Image (cartoon, rainbow, N blue to C red; front, top):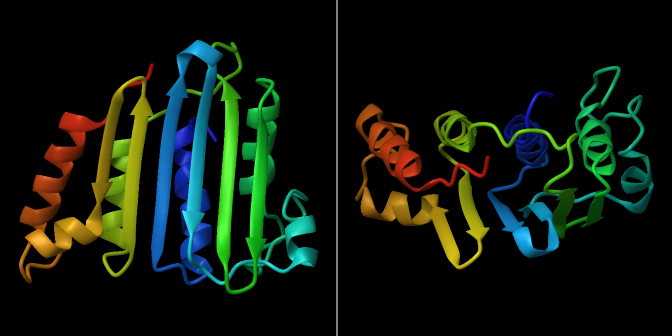
Length: 178
């Protein structure tokens, strides 16, 4: 995958396939420690220890395909920068993923368009709740579709006018880390 936002899209789609209703995505930049971290937490089915032990194998998948490249490729991208991917999951408890990249490393993938990734998720899965948070220094931006749905007062979140307003909000507030 070309950038981190596409990796995030792939991992969040995995969460949705695992029946997650609420998915949290956190991006944090700690320039002082040369660290960029992506966390994805969901309330889906979770994985048993046997499945969790196999998810880094590119020839293992639970989706009926022949390969499951998302997690192995993301782990490889992180490890190439001196970072790591950590997964924690249990049946009925959901899944927590933390991926660390050395920020200044020449092989760190570009962040990509988090606005486009979030818009794809919101428009494609209006029945799910997404929390997106960015942290860089003292700056924190938090976006929660539960709050947006409440503010819409019955208007569907996937309505064209609502999606337009959400896109504007995200474009205005999402940090361009590059």
